[in-house]
Amino acid sequence: MATSRPFALLVTHGVLGEELVRTVASILGPQTDTITVSNSGLSSDALIAAIELKLADIPDTAPVVLFTDLAAGSCGIASRRITPEGRPFRRITGVNLPMLLEFFHYRDTLSLDELLPRMEAKGKAGILVL
Image: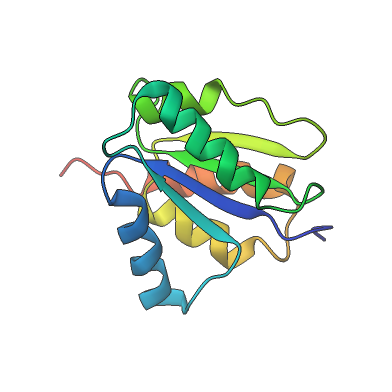
């Protein structure tokens, strides 16, 4: 059993994070404990500051899964420069809808150690070349 509901923090280019969360809500219903940050119009330092500001709004003991769209893009690079102390914190790049659906569907019943490999598998399984 998960000890505490993990927050989802999506750091993406443009409105991708907002649209992914909106799409998840249309499938699973509205989700709480979810925050998005866009890189639009932000320098690298400003993006890091925006992520840190959002993290400051999350209770210190709450686990956080930080999702980014591209590992090598500005969002992925900025997320790797974040070093939150004293909380469970994991990073995932390549966020997609199957991965997020798995996260939101099971975040209340599985630990992060159980959930993260499932999310990775669902994310990869959602990519097919036909």
